[in-house]
Amino acid sequence: MEHVEANNYSKAIASINKAITLKPEVVDYYVQRAEAYVQMCDFQSAILNYKRVCCLDPDNGELYTRLAFLYYFQGQCLFDQKLFPEALEAFSRAAEMKPEVVGYHTRSVACLAALNRHGECLALVNKRLEEDQGNPDTYVMRARLHKMFRNFTLCYYDVKDALSLDPEHIEALHLKDGLESRAKECKDQAVQLNILGKLRDSLQRISLAIETNPSVASYHILRGAIHRKLGDFNSAIDDYLLAMDKTDHDEESATYQDAQKQLLLTYNDFAVECFTKGFFEEAVILLNKAIKGEKREKGLYINRGDCFFRQNDMNFALADYHQALELDALDQNVKTRISIIHNEHGVADYLDKKYVDAEARFTLAIQHNAGIAQYYISRSRARYMLEKHSGARQDVLIALHLDPGNEELMSLLSRLFPGKSVSDIMQSRAAAAAKLALQNLVSTASPVKLQPLEKDLAKDKQQKHVQLLDPSKQVAGSLRHGGIFPDLKACMQENAFHFKIAQDKKKINDNIKTALHERKSLRYTGARVRAEVPPGVKKEEMILDPKGEKKSTGWRQFSMGIGVQDVP
Image 1 (tube, rainbow, N blue to C red):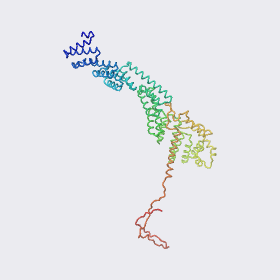
Image 2 (tube, one colour):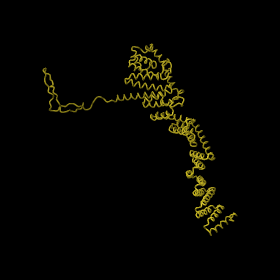
Image 3 (cartoon, rainbow, N blue to C red):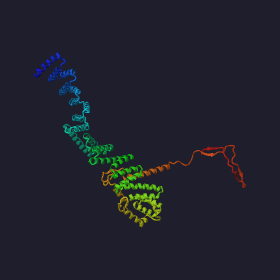
Image 4 (cartoon, rainbow, N blue to C red):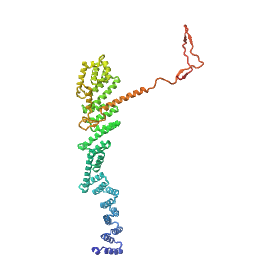
């Protein structure tokens, strides 16, 4: 001990060696020699002495603690010398002996990181977190590893877990600030790229922003809008639902309300896309979801009605159009659709000779759209069949004012005004009364006075049609909203609605023509059956009447069978 106090560790070790030779079972001699080696920085010899001590006194826990520390001390010296593999082995031995000491595992992770063995490094940290989840430093360590691997989402959640354990943790707060600033920068870049029309690049930037800071719900709304522009409606819907989830479905939140609006608009756009591709049932399902979320938007009812119309479910279509009309009684597009459906029902009733029902249907069509001459012509035919000649004449006169060139009018004029020319009819008092009635006609669906009839009726009609479809007053392919949503995409425009009717009628006419031209001939050219009298059988006996003419006896004669002959 005198040599140790004099810092003469070589002589102290020599003296201890002699003592151990005399009494090798004394534990303290090995401990003293190990500490002397430590002072000489000969960690390997010190470790060997402590191993010997542990064998002599295996129940002494302090000896194992000291041995683990020596392994750690040796590993730290090797680490400082950048001998990372040797240092890793030393730290691993220390951690095996004392697994509850976090520092030993931390230094092992540092060695693996220095050796670029990041996968093993992350696995070691995960294993440590399975055993101890109460240390924020371990979460911060794993967050840094995730950041190194560019797994920013996992990094963010590890930082969040660390702050939940220690809200004042300096490194965790620093990491959080860095992630949030990086996410905001990516979001700003995405907005700029979106404005420039570079949607794909914008999508990449906003996706990186969401990965870096997944807690911001508004980022999902922006990415959903980009997906919607690109036509990826499923991804857009997922983003809006995530945004609503991250607001905890707080209906008072502005972010939640915005996400809900965008979700319903996406449902509508997706339904329009399905409609254009002929998937009407899927479009109805999507519109049902949209209407469930917002029952005050007329455009959703119009689009669903169009889907039912294309499926030939006229009653459901009519119900949706009436619902839309209740929300906006001045919408001419809805009135046009309702009038067309009533007209089609009226035509069907007229063909079935249900003239009363047909007249009622045509009247409803006129009430919703009083500017179509064909409706008056059809109602005139129904009234003529019901012998309501006065009403039929008035309808014909109104139709004549609306569409003077209609060919169907000539046949009706000859029956309702026999012996009168068109000029005589137009100059009559009845025609003047019909013109006045047309000018002051009021629609019962919405009390809106029609525009007065001008001299150039065809020109006025064209201007009215342009007004309905003017892009400055209505976005092409969209429906005007009721103050709740921006303009919705429409499944069908009015011209497409008429085209569908004409297309169906043309298909029916084509089928009739095909059946007419390809029908089978009534002339039979196959084998025929005729009676054949077998040889040896006498024909029916004949008798002579008093006048000398042959007359049958009245007895029926039966043949032996029938024969088959070909028709020449």
